[in-house]
Structures are given as structure tokens and as C-alpha cells.
Length: 287
Ligand code: MN
Picture 1 (tube, rainbow, N blue to C red):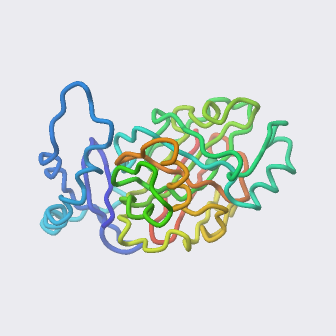
Picture 2 (cartoon, rainbow, N blue to C red):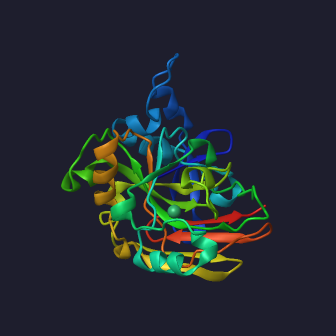
Picture 3 (cartoon, rainbow, N blue to C red):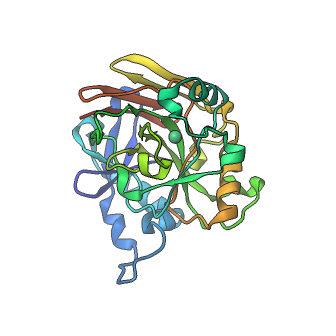
């Protein structure tokens, strides 16, 4: 199932193939979620409830007319992630390009994921596929980083590698937008709009092997990044094992798995197209 959020916090199921994708409004299912009072939950309520709601969501989608996907404004498919976990330098060729280019490394210590571990991005940086990335520091180098994103579905506290994928609700395409510079990653990658998630969530049953997904990113039609998740130095399961060794992952938490080689700057007016096999593509403008 492909699940999107759109327009004024509506929920939809995406059906159909490439050029004829339609959104089927299933917003009424949100009435089945608990209503919360302070303190708010430590997870995303829809993602937590999803396994028990899927049959009813499919039935609602069956009965709803299809809206062409181009006619809706896509929001991030997860409304309220409490953590956005991200992997640094998790493709070998990206490590090599980062070491070779002073405008990427800025004299900072670029070490691969085995030694560096993971970092966190501010949830306030999250946008959906129909929103623009707004360049915060035009005088700096602002790079695109396409990444496969795993969306955690069930609580994961110190899970082993072989149990890890069972905790995933689904996958989406991510852009980990980055200001290059000497500051901490958590600062440079947390500007408003610097975390793009979309175009929708594809449930994990449709992605049996997240370690064999082709991906590419173009800017103004020119290919910049192109690889397969087979080239990840640490795969999705290993990243979940590593993250959950340090903190409990909760439903709706996002795991950005790292970017391949080909990172490059974007400026206002550019249009990025990010695609991952089995998930879909999204076109993001830069302002
Ligand atoms: Mn990244």
C-alpha cells in the first residue's frame, strides 16, 4: 500500500501506475485514532496504529474516487516523527569524493559510518514533496543528498540485525539537504525545509529487499546521483541495530540511510527529481 498525506492534512491511498497515479481519500480513518491530551505521545499515532487499520483503509480507498496525483499538494507522509536519524558517509564512493573535495569536507574529520555512528536532524526541518526547499544560506554551498528512508513502525529497543526489518512500517524517498561548512551536521542539516520526505510511504510488504533498490537524482534534468542501495556500507537492518543500541526507535521515527556519490550544490530556481525503485519519484523546486 502507498499512503500519502495531502492538502489540508488529508490521508490518501495512492493507486495506479507511473503516468496514471491517483489518490483515494481515506481521511475518515483518522477518526479511529485516539484523541490526545497533554502530554502528547512519544510516537506518530497513525504509523503506530497502521497495522490494525490497513484493511479498513483499503476498503475506504476502494469506495473513493481517484484524484490525479498532480492535483494534490503532497505533505510529508509521516506527520509527527519524533526523531529523524541519519547516517553519515555510508557509501564508499561518497566517502572518497568527500575526502577529495575541500568544499565538502571543510577540514572536518570525514570518517565513515563504522566509526562515526549516526546523527540526528531536527524534525522541524521536514517538508513534503510539493513544498520547495528554501535555501537558508545562499552564500554557502547547499547540496542535495538523495537517500532511502526507512520509517519505523514498531518500538525498537536494542534490536538485533535479523529482527530489525520487522520493525519497519515502510519506505520513502528522502532528501537530506546540507549546508557545507564546519558546523555540526545536526545544525547544517536542520534548516527549515532541509529534510524532504515523499512522495508517499510504501509499506514494507511491497519492498521485500531494501538492499537492492536503484535510485537516482537529477537536477534540471541532468543526472547527479545514481546508485543502488546494494552499495550501502551498512544496510537498513544494520543501521536500525546501531541506532536502537543507543536509543529506542518509536513508530514514525525516520531513518535516513545515507547518500551515494554525486552530491553537488543547488541554487534557487533549480528543480530536483528524486526517484527510488519501488517507491516512486518526486520533483522538488529550490527557492
Ligand atoms: Mn545524508
